[in-house]
Image 1: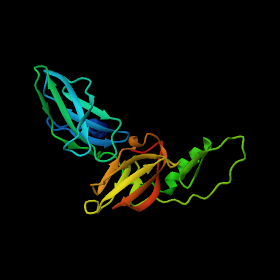
Image 2: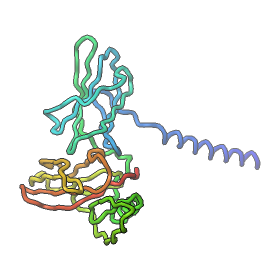
Image 3: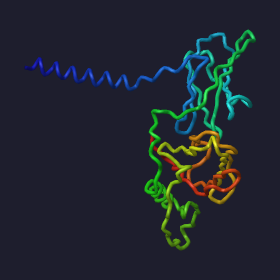
Image 4: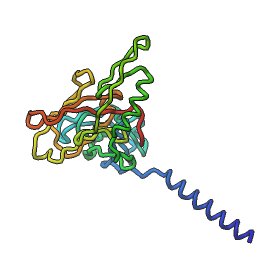
Amino acid sequence: MKQLSRFILFVVFFTASFFSVKAQIQPTPPVLPEFSALIKTGKIQLDFISGFRDVKFIGVQRSLDSVLNFSTIGLVNNPTDMRISYQDLKPLPGSNYYRIFIQFNNGRYMFSKIMLAVPDSTIDDSKKLQLADVKDAIAAAKEAGVTITNGVATTTSPTKEKPKEEKIVWHPSNYIYTTADGNVNIKLPDAADKKYSVKFYEPDGSFLFEIREVKEPFLILEKAIFLHSGWFNFEIYQDGKSYEKWNLYIPLSYRN
């Protein structure tokens, strides 16, 4: 009986250990000229396997249109490593396309395939931030002396009389909204047939950046593009005419 109990405990321990180790194993990235470009929280990460050793440097190039206007944004730290990872901490608003440039010591060079950055499937971004989520962030902001009313944040002096609190009536847009991973989604199903553009603003109305033409029905803007957390205003234009004008909230902390 004791031997049976010990055997069962051994099987349970072995099974738990096996799945624990298996969960920690990272998937093997593609081999050049292919690579992966995943939109993560706070960055876009490129991963690939390089079989080259006589390498002078490896550069990472980025473009918004996938064909032209590629520019080098950085170099890989250890170009002779077999497994290489590069992080773009300042992605551009819109679709980010990447390619790898390999320069060899003998003067020859080559380019990888062109890859579009896509959402990381391991990050749960399915939950759209609702009013309850924003209220928690607003409560934390008030403790720091920041008052947020209808999506506009103003700092108040603790020595002055406490302003009267106003009820915040807010709901996420169906077209541009923040998800649980902190990124901003643009969802315009008929983008291919209609000409949409989007402008983003700071809460005080100062211009932040613009997407002159939304070509994809679904687009993710990495939260790092916005430079800081808090409220942001946006306006969607269809054929040059205002289509929707609203705001969104990017939390300081977020869930993976």
